[in-house]
Image (cartoon, rainbow, N blue to C red; front, side, top):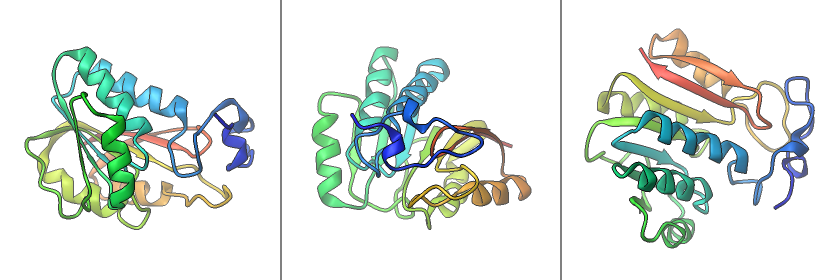
Length: 187
């Protein structure tokens, strides 16, 4: 698997992107996918919603964690039908339902315990705001691509997360991964 340095340049908060790996420039860093799977193991959610499945690498990790937990479901959303099909095939036999639909149209089947937002950059803040009605205080929201500063072709989502913080929706902790990751809790 190529190193993340292939797509993300070094910066002050993450001087060694080569320590991380990603299958391609659209997929979450492999090690970040492991972290999200660890959250699934540690938090024991009943419903995980992932937006932006891409090719299903992190989706599969979430599904394997849910399977090991012995309960729970991941609803993963991907607007690109071809990618959704690849993700669904990767997750066959796991407690994962991949849908080729927009996060702005999706109706969750139950209360969301963990939301992993990694969809189209222009939708992320709106989808978090939309899914709040299906989440209880204390639920977790993880948002990818939240580094500050220039990172090649990736867009910085940190300002969108900060708008949600200022609006009193959630509280975030920013992790200095190559593309950035915010682990947030609903207020």
